[in-house]
Every structure is written in C-alpha cells, then in structure tokens.
Length: 163
Image (cartoon, rainbow, N blue to C red; front, top):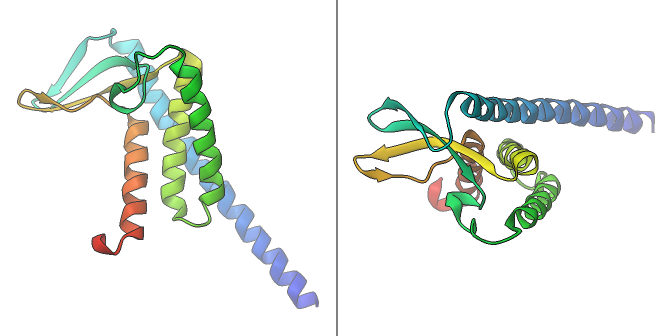
C-alpha cells in the first residue's frame, strides 16, 4: 500500500512539473508575440510598410475579422470572436491529453495572444507581409505562425499519409 501511495505521489509531482514547464512556454510564446506587435505599433504607422527584402515587408494592419480578414465587415463580430476563442481555448485544455502537448501548447499560445489583442484593442494586429513578385499572401502575425505550426504538427502526427 505504501508503495502505491509513493508511486502516485511521484506521478503527481511529475505532472505538476510538466504543467509548470508548459505554462512557461505559453508565457514565453505570448510574450514574443505581444512584444513584436507592440514594436510594430510604436515604429510603423497604420497601413505604412517597412521594406525588409524583395519578398518581405512589415506593415501595420488591424484585422477586425478572422484569418485573412474574413468576416471583418459584420457588426459586433469582435464579441462573437472573443467567445469563439474562449471556447476553443477551453477545448484545447481538455484535449491536451489526446494530442501532442507541444502542438496544443503552441496553438493555445497563439490563440490566447490574438485573444489578448482582440480584448485590448478590438482587433488583432497583423504585420508580416510575404510576397512573391506582385502576389501578396494575406498579412499575418507571429501568433498566427504558432497556430499554423501547431496544426501542422497535429496533422503530421495523426495522419499516416504524412508519416
């Protein structure tokens, strides 16, 4: 009986340690994204771009919609998107056990960082403009990169085709 209690206690300590490490990753990723957005707000005027190289510009845009600016013209969309983001974050907390914790941590960080923007400003700050010749991809931010990478990891780990 004492052995079982010791094993359970050790197991709980390992879980607590892992949660603390994941929380530090979440905080670090959110900090990176929010600092980059803050730098853009302070250094670049709205709708102005800063040339980096032939395929990359930095531009300060306000995204009132979802990815790629979809749904931006609907009234009260911000309140709806805040609720959707909170629901997705709650779902991620519960499915973290079923998926790779790295991918869900990265996705959680990206969504939470964009949610902080949406609550603070009423929009999400986008600033990375990648283009090839005259074709511009939709402008995005670092949190969007986190979400994209996390989804790619989940797809890679769960579909035999990509393994």
